[in-house]
Image (cartoon, rainbow, N blue to C red; front, side, top):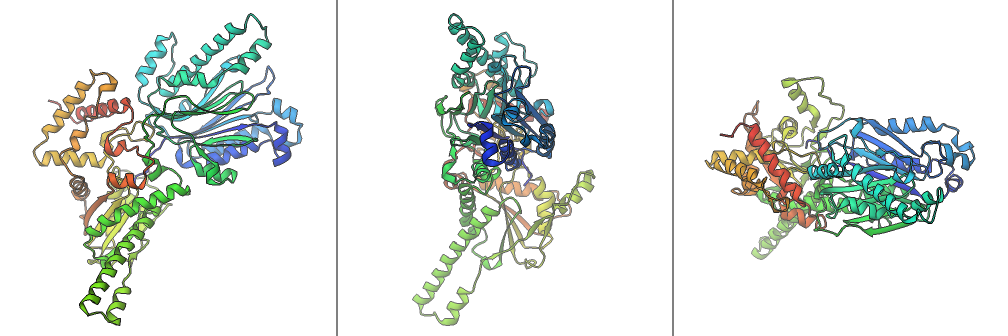
Length: 630
């Protein structure tokens, strides 16, 4: 498939012991930095556009920096960041006394934030890389923040910020959140100041305000204004740290803590690997729940927002998360297994002339599940044939042995050539080079006879499928090629972190539009446009997804056939094999991944009002840009 840009990755570490403890036990003051590097590298798949690190020093004396930040752009950002940090720390840091390191050494502190970014809103550059920073001479009012999030109500957030008297310098959800949390922090600071000013004087007054700060209450006030999917993380200059997951649990977050350390990351196996922990030791942060660590290092879990309907992201499980997680590996196998019955029906039970394979680096686990279930169905069919022979009295050793000798055929057909690069060419030259990104294993398919099945984890745009994968598979001259997707048809944009924000990206959308025109019911297109426009006058909570009407007249199979037709139409040279497409059903998805029912990109059932508003706006944009408007 075409690689999808994805929601970001986060990593938090809070040390709960003095620095000399880690130097004595682990041999270095950079213990937490080393762990942060590993947490970020293990999540590199979640962001290759930019990365950033923030460190808070609780022991920094006045006149010295207390929050350090380093950011970089590009796929090598992590290495660049830690190389720069290492140069600033120096190679001889472990030779200094702990007190000096704790007070003066850069990037060695108690609170660590790491972030990996893919932009999903079209905004990029170093100024949009996390962590973002709000500096203040008061430690408590200094704030460093990062997150895996995408907000769907930025307009409303901006309006509230402006109405509060502030003047935001950027129009983005990141800027809005920083200002909202900062404002809530300022107000709580001022409230505590008024409460304590008659009984205490500085510096005791400032210290007591820091000690009494309830960071959970601060974040709760800001978060009530957020509509979207998020894992929001941050820390104050005084040492309070927080991580909050949205009420629907859209993006994931996992944590672990003991008497030495508190850690949070976007994926469970990352924490397991870096800290050598069993799966049961790493807990999932619940929807609406916050992990809070105060200035003194005390840990609390608090339900800051009411838990909403479970909309944990299913695409996380299908595509983005590391397959080394035990549950995700099992679920991906179940996705493949769910496709086997329909696939057996498509090939008419002709297993002798069916070769099963997968697209490399994407769908191996689903392939294993598909092969296993296909084999189970095959074995049941063989058992039935043997029973029929016995019942009819025609069973003999040779006949039974002939049936038992039949095997399922599966091969490694496609091989990805990781050395191929096509950025130096344009137009038709680029397309010609693109098809060679994959090689094929010759001699595995009987030309003109076999059906070649290749499973992928998703088919979104269809570009790579048409230009590269199908072209290479067709070189083997199978009679038929069936491309199998272990996810359902991607029909709707995502607005919660995945880079799928326009309808024109989806081959399923184009397939439905094509069918509407072919069947003479393209009035549905114009009526949908008018309904989307009318929705603008309604309150956010009353809006619905009008784009569902585009798909409503057709079955999944009809749209799949239309997708196959799009892939074949106008192809030059023409494909030799017949091309068919098989997608997983929504029912199969939910059966395989029951605990992560968030499926809005497949079903159009968005978890928040902002999703419905934005999908309707996406249809308006597509409609008007294609000059259909009359």
